[in-house]
Amino acid sequence: MIIDIVKVFIPLTASFIIGILITPTLTHYLYHFQMWKKVAGKKDFDGQDTPIFNKLHQTNEVSVPKLGGVIIWISVFVATIIFWIIAKITEIDLFVKLDFLSRNQTWIPLSTLLIGAVVGAIDDYLDVKGNGGHIAGGLSLKKRLLVVGTIGLLCGLWFFSKLGVESIGLPFGNEIFVGWLIIPIFSLIMIFIYSGGVIDGLDGLAGGVFAVMFTSYAGIAFYQDQINLAAFCSVIVGAILAFLWFNIPPARFYMSETGTMALTITLTVVAFMTDKLAGGYGILVLPIIAMPLIITSFSDIIQIFSKRIRGKKVFLIAPLHHHFEALGWPSYKVTMRYWILSLVFGIVGVILALAA
Image (cartoon, rainbow, N blue to C red; front, side, top):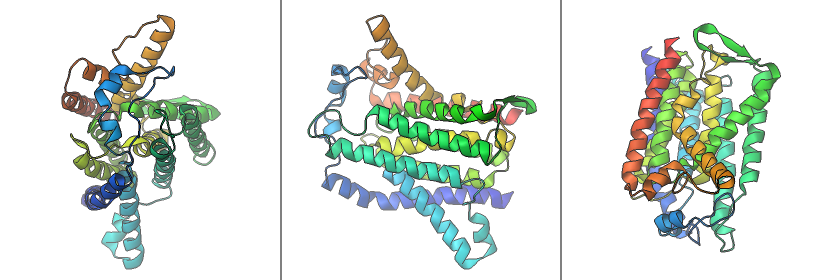
């Protein structure tokens, strides 16, 4: 038990330290190469201008770099490889036990983290360098959804054909048998969770929310005796905290797509890893633990349908955190209240996951 606890917290500490150490260099290059949008503002899903958002964020958009999420996935990857190499070279029992890179628990989530990070980085780069001076840059939403959906289908296919997952776990040992439908279900859930990645809109907001969500699943995985997966979740938390150290107001950089895509699709994979595969129901508690992402995504959906059907908006601006900002709330108040709610939802989700 003690070594398992150590195995969870030492990688967290290591990734945090790595993140803190690499950030000054990364920050230097982000500012040196001016990795921010060259034209302030954005358009909504209908291609219309968003004057309220543009008024609130016109300065930061053209002065604060994107690609800050690179800190997170580099820290995770470096920490993971360091522990793996030390275990292989020394073969000392303690270091062998601290190695959490395993085929049955961490290969898939680590792969999705890196794939999402690379695709997200491409999108961010195109957004700041390849937009030709236009407001809209980067990969289109359709292309990003296609990538995420494809990753979800491949993951679902692997879970179904290689791991034999054909159902979704329910409390008290029950389950919903879905058979091959687990493949499209996996993809749809991943797309929906990814859509909540637009929560990355205020200084410190996304970092705090994601840290709580992965901490929650680290606790669930630990309870299920998936210690390697728990350690992997904790190493992500450590990296996020390092990012958050520099992202709290005023943010030195934004997480942007290279962070949000990597984290959202990996969160989906972790939820499935803690579901029927481990005798739990990680999918059932996902809407609770990821409630900030769910609310964020639904606020966008509600706004779009209201404008198209009713001809008017529900929120001053969507997603929801910007609505509160438009009401006059200071951004730090919105951020911290989201942190509090994330913690509450995370605790409730963990309790439900462990109660039955």
